[in-house]
Length: 570
Image 1: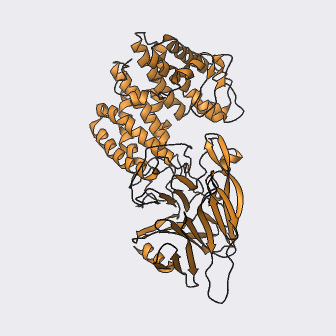
Image 2: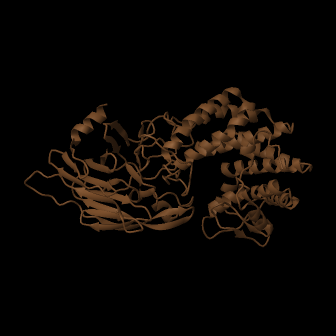
Image 3: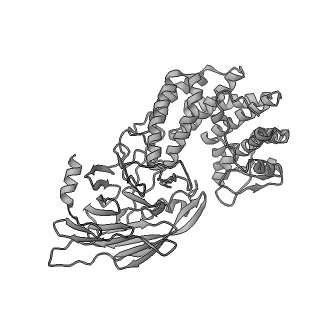
């Protein structure tokens, strides 16, 4: 079967084909409804009840994808693959049921569900599925019912109205759906108001590059949303060639820039770290042989070695609070195909205890004054033409230098009430990282956290923690040090293991461990040793380090204050 998608196939086909496409549709025929790929099916006695059904958990998420017409799209996927009219009939029946229900004055839904029903996300996806339905009806040589055309015109008015337009990816969702609608109507010579196209072109001229930093990183603090933008750009490239030539050229340039960061943030095996509100399990494609890169405007450093064994992520600073966790100063680490230090990821869209807790500073690989969580500042999303070129707090990456065998980056973590903290990451390539955290201001001590991968067992011993893989082999050691003046010997902080959890997949958590250090001093000096090599450190009171690497005849002297001044002034 070859459907005519009117040059908007990537937009209109809301759900992709999978090996389970036919079985999903067959289950829907039996009222066992797939709502979303990562959610369990819903069994209903009557499909007319689908629109107001209540769920014991994740109510907002279930309601969103029901009102977004994902079940309709699943049925149309099966029709497109098999040409069996039973799937098309069921899709039509669902849409008719929704239209009748939506016209009822006293719907059996609460205020929150109504907000989702009439929200931008659901409106956008419903429009895409309705265009998909029209494409299938045309192929089947059926007449397109007037109520479907009228429903799409109604949706188009909502999507084109600037009063409904959202910031960030939700605004782009609206643009995407409206672009698919215009291509469908143009292809069928169906008339629509001229302001649909006028408003779309006006918005896209600004929004198509609005949400990227100068170095090509999506500003919503989560790689998952960067990949959503990447997908959006790939979907609109062809339809824009028909709509507006200059916009098509602009989108092509933005796509190139966004693709560069997509390779950098993906680990060598193609997996994408679950940073911020990124869904677990996201994959892109293997990214091999890349060098470290400082993304100044995005406030990120990605450490990478050319042998693809080490990948590390260091970030501090933000341009919007959207999808932001309390993770300024975070340091995530991947080594030889394994997550060593992880971000806990994203559970669901609810405001439950676990959904909020997973965002806290103590669940991320960073440092804080005792007992304080980072207080993330917010942007007033009701304002138009918000300037995303500036950080909205003093947290930021202060600088980065590649010094040959050593790479160094420094961050300021400023979202605490009592003080700010300067964090220095020193990479002694290839297998050693040093972290120097220093509080500036009033503090009663510091706490440092390391959230470790699920397949790793921590074995604490004093100030050291050995990390063992599933075979009991030591793959990493984390150790604390203190600066000594030759007269007074200070004992480094002892490691404690705290329970934690991370998002194994959407709405499902899995237990994990966090390493916790606490000190009454105003600094931490920490080493991370990967593999079998050993590191000996003499830390002196003048904040210099003498580093002796077991496998190297070269001894390294590091003057931390001198390094800091050079990097910040450069």
